Image (cartoon, rainbow, N blue to C red; front, side):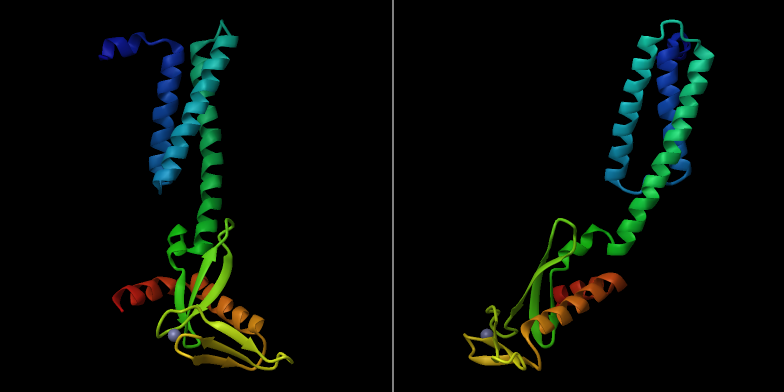
Length: 198
Ligand SMILES: [Zn+2]
């Protein structure tokens, strides 16, 4: 398409092109395209916006080109403000969890025992389990009837790896607090690295 053809474009096409280019320039200037998913989402939203413009054009056969373009620009500005607000909210969420990579942090050593866990679909801790630091067998917990003492024992090594004055829930909540602390402070990154090296 040469310049001559561009000049001949209908108001609709001109509107669409200025909308897309204007939006992209705004997005670049404001440095908000910070991830591929966010960029794809922007593209999808632009497509939706273009469809809306086409619909508006179809139901209004006597569209005035100037007004049409200015309205398009106003819509883009309004849309970009909305996009920026949403992006800020996303950043806030990702700061809380230090990005989706934290999902790879799913095992660590606490209380001299290896712990593994999962995350549920809300990205919060789910099902923490303990394993033998020697043979990697899942540990069983023997708690006294009065709940005063609990032992984490490996049936394979026949060895108690951790003893606690309290019931199993105490141990589990202690470990969960350690994991949550590491997630909050970003220490999990160092601990993943340590595990990979070791
Ligand atoms: Zn063992």
